[in-house]
Image (cartoon, rainbow, N blue to C red; front, side):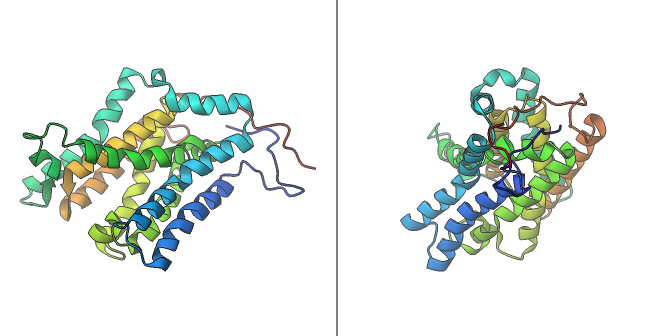
Length: 297
């Protein structure tokens, strides 16, 4: 994919559509809130901490929407919102991929650990309550889905397209995966976050968390590119992945198997679909052109 006459900032050669400007804006919003929580020594369990957590989570989506309106003209903006709301972009085949991919990887990792004598797998608390409370899963589902909704409007909704203009789908995914991983870093220093309370900074679990995000990024691109760039598909996949790992909780060796399996999955994906677009076609549906009225002075 190639971009023609990219918009620029003032008299510089820096394109407004440059994905690194989006990343800078995203980190400014998110890290500004989360580093503020660290500086104020507030926990996410407090009202102030919860507000800062949510404002930080909004960062990718807010920056994504902002850059869509800055970089694209009206057709591009319409295309963005269509990709958020159009269910028809997700065929039955890819709906099954969204539904089954993460559970298959998690269950395989759990079974592998159990077969080898491990016991480092447990079930989410809501499963023990569902017999008396049929909607016990809803809080877990809500909190598993809220971050993807706020994040994916930017990560895949905006940044991935900009990266893929000049890079292969695989390289774009790896870059986005590393950035996405680093974006979580302040959470390891804030009480009340999963990263702080359950993982901890500098632990083996910390490195598994950070590394494990990268293959997920490739898998998300694979689904995104094969569903006509559906943001909705990636929101659902991201949320369902979160819900799955919060329902079948892996620790220790099973978590290692989990990450290894994700790398095996993306190796299989790239072997079958290729690295250029991660689709059967050499060319992906091209995003709308950038705004022509934003031009070098």
